[in-house]
Image 1 (cartoon, rainbow, N blue to C red):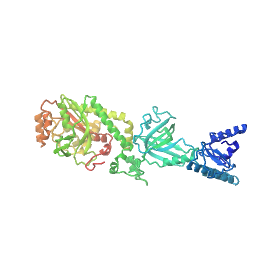
Image 2: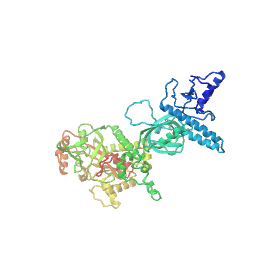
Image 3: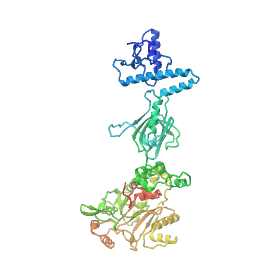
Image 4: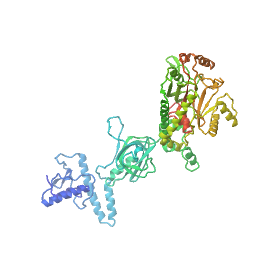
Length: 629
């Protein structure tokens, strides 16, 4: 059927509310019809469904985004007669319900507006009517959306989807201003108030960017839904944000010169609404916490156990996350420095039949009916590698010590950085290799991890340690005299206490201008059975420790490579020979003089960064009171 132009005006629900573009299209169609005295075809683009008005079947305008176009037109009479689409197929109940609802809204709006026009405060009431009607009227699809991705189960591969790293935004090498970007990260912070939303997205713990959304006047209802969805996000949820990158000044984000105008937010993983503790509280320095205690609103002080029990949250703290990055870089630099000096990497057994260090500090276990223990170090196997003509070797691997030491610098399991090398004449050859390695490590850390070190030092203040161009070696006898001159009572053949180590480090720093030095010629009685005695006085040994900021980070020595001397040393210490027979046997077929060292990675990180506890330098620390998580 066809309908005249005049009829069309009346069938658009009396005051048919259509978008401006549709209104213009309708007006043009009707004008053309009047000019030619012809009927307007039902295929006019502004029409989408049939309704029955009086005795004529006509198409009606779309329901979405209705706007009042006319206030005095008649209201259509919609009864229960079936309504059909342009193909004559009856509409569904839902579609019919929408038609009736739209007609009722149009009628109500026309009536209220007419009443408002006849009163003194008609202008204000008219605005209220428009607002009330807008709240229940459907809108055209908005150019933005919120999506819940559900559980990602690798159902689709999207290799062409490009994600922008947050640290690249606003940089010369990053996406251009005005371009569309897609980033994924954690919701570090949010502020949704009134008609705006500000999200701070964090990626990799160190880098943040602000994303913003403002209410759209063209789609107020969907804007409200979007704002409610953003407000419902919980801190630390994993989300994706897509939008336009634009210039801005943002003080609350690391990317302070840009922000993202949101077009889409996708929820990837919703975080529980209550965290064990707030990231912001865990990121404060000790100085900030102490200063707040003098105010009426002190910051919470988070206990070590609370942090370690929820270590996966604690490691999201920028400084703590950066510590793990520094730890990783130390391993890489250790490998690079030694590889450049001709070393190769080994992987030695961690289940051993004997005790590599002697004593009782081992974790024992049953190995298919035979006694065994976890390796205290790769010491014996490093030396066997020298016997196998590998000449220079190193290893990065776990070390286990069953020592009931509940101090700030001891762990029962840590990562060992071990090296061993053959030398020609003197163990000073080993010390020079170690000094070169540590020098490269320190310089490399400061250049490669400047960003991480800055973040760490904001929470845990420190400076790069001082070290000399050539190895600084202090002999045992010299060290004892320095302590005596400082008023300390020390025996000549007892091991150093922690207090004496720190004092000696202070004295060396003041006299020699370094935080990093070697102490050699330790008393033989306080060193392992495989340590070579000094040729001038067997009460001392060809051994050395390396100290950083007044605490030991490395222990090493020339090893006994003569079988008879080694056997006698083992017997003199009361260590069982049987579990070590293979080790001793490796010396009987020609063994070059050799030496090496073992370094605790976590302790090295802890002291380099001047942290207050070695547990901060361990991802999941193991001590006498902790074997989880």
